[in-house]
Image (cartoon, rainbow, N blue to C red; front, side, top):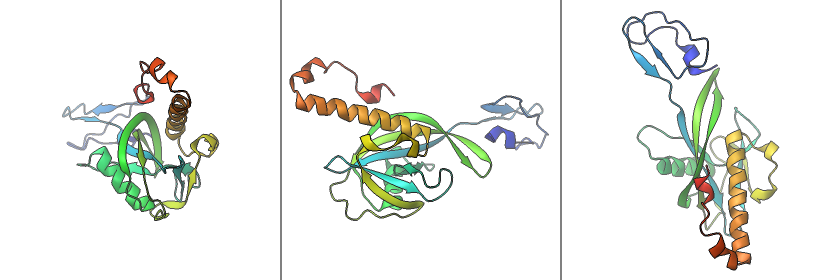
Length: 199
């Protein structure tokens, strides 16, 4: 159920509120004119890769999407930057310190938790780890695997936003692989926008 449907009374004056029949991004009290905006929560996640090109995928231990594949990440706390939150989440979930985090793209998402469907904006980054033997399944993680991202079954992915970001990630890396295989293409394609600019 959308957040606005859980508000029955004005949090300022206690006036009973009429629940909008259609999804709303705000409500305004008819008595005291208090306005509240339902903004999306913000989350950050990363495609963390090793030198061999494999990417770290986790299998979720909890609902929503328990048992499905995802990438390390989580919600950004008040006062955190996206990068700070992401580094914290990666340490908490898989015991790794990611280096060179770079913004990649963003997609909207929905997160169902305790009868509330939260609108979320997922920020995706790419990052690297040079030493991965300390990776471990920790908070909220059932297991982890280093996988070729191009071979991951999209149906196994937990959320639509991750599926869309993974598709772009694979396309982006395929384009760079082709440039390395044929350096003459580098100049011809240099005017093209990066994948992150299409998000």
